[in-house]
Amino acid sequence: MNFCPECGGPLLRHVVAGETRNHWYCQRCRTRHYAGPRVVVTAFVACGKRLLWVQRDLEPQRGKWAIPGGFLEMGETLAEGAARELYEEAGVQLPPAQLQLYMTGSITFINQLYVGFRAVVESDQCVPGVESMACRFLTREQCPWSQVAYPQVNDSIRQAYDDLDSGRFDVWQAQMTEAHYELQPVSQR
Image (cartoon, rainbow, N blue to C red; front, top):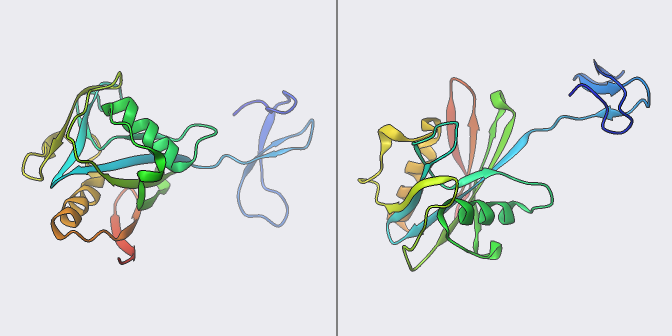
């Protein structure tokens, strides 16, 4: 950020008295601007013991495989964003109310928050959207583990397969740093 979105004045990094973090500060209108984390939403969609995967047709990681997801857009609820990403990437249309909270996480080193939802569908019908080369429901054994777009989250994906196998779906919380990934249950159902 270089200029104030309120008045167009130049921005400086500034620590306000009594606070410990830098914020963008406009000298002209004296407004503080907080640069918060970006929110990523995903949809773990199961058909039987298979999860829906998409092969990315966008950079970064073009050609690699991922669980459908992307950045939350302005004016969306978390579930609306996950439902939109699911439709855009795999042509699967689910009402946001059908998505259940499944995983949350903090990816502090890239300033992102992660919210994953889960859903079960009866049909494995999916169609690659404009952001995907391919999409399909895959068992754990069919997964392209060596071609996963973001292998840092493979533990989350393996946990989803474990939950499918057991039929028990907890809500999970992840903490990710550049060197460490930890996944813990928040609640047990």
